[in-house]
Length: 183
Image (cartoon, rainbow, N blue to C red; front, side):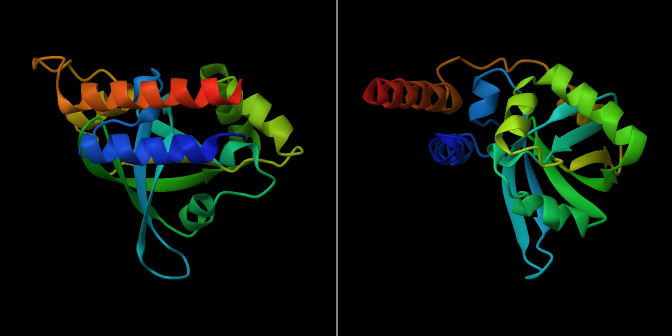
């Protein structure tokens, strides 16, 4: 998808400024997380930021890769892993990984598209590639983890003029500047 590199670079900047608590998608009102999974070839931890779909007490991840014809590398790593680590809502916790297939995949896909209709557009852009769908379950489903997944963590009581707010403003200004350059 056009502009994905700019979004990913902005996301890294925002995550660095907020110590991983927020990403660009969070600023746009969409839930995002950082997924860390061991690389299937290197054995080294690999971290990537992703949009996720809250699904009861689990997380759905869709391997859309911005509508590319190729599967995302994180999805190949996740297929080879039984566990991963998720960083969402300021909380980091281990999860079990299941790739969803068959009839359950169709249900999960419908849930994901209802949550984020952009997946349909990305599917069209990919030439009809079947996106990999994963379900992640917290190893220890404690109330703070479940609140982070559902996006119901209480709002901070600090001033709105914190580093995350300033980073969000900087990203917004950069995005507006980028759009104005293209018009």
